[in-house]
Image (cartoon, rainbow, N blue to C red; front, side):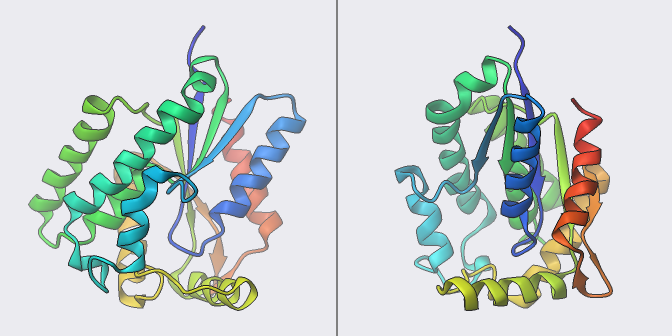
Length: 223
């Protein structure tokens, strides 16, 4: 049997990836598709321990305190464990895998730490080789980028903190870093052919239902 489809939902922090992944999963299941949704980092798994320590600030209060290669390795190990123990069999049996973040997040969040273009290209080549060749993780069939302006995402992050409590991680509480990440998302989306889903207008998030319809319409093209 042929492998299934691996679709990635990408966006900056606070842009509604979790909600959109859930809505898309529910809709595809209603249509009769076999769907498995996964989220990265896998915070409930032991494999995410180093990721949690990094995002909590145990290795430094700023994202830039941990170099791109070290941080990427933390996240890659978590993805490998998830793939081998939670969704590999479903993927190989033909299911649709919907991932809230994937290697593509590392491409963006860690590449912004490297200001020199040649250094960034070297890092991106290394990451591709490390995760997809050496670790054997499957390549995505399509990546969908929820393009939300940083100021709109910051409002959602603040609202989530008020509603659910907790403290934003070292990425979320660094506004300058979030802006750099958004610029990198747009750059890499164009470079690698990711599908861009406009998700805000004039600094305000678009309605959840509108973003969902835009996302669903694009996903259907790959089914």
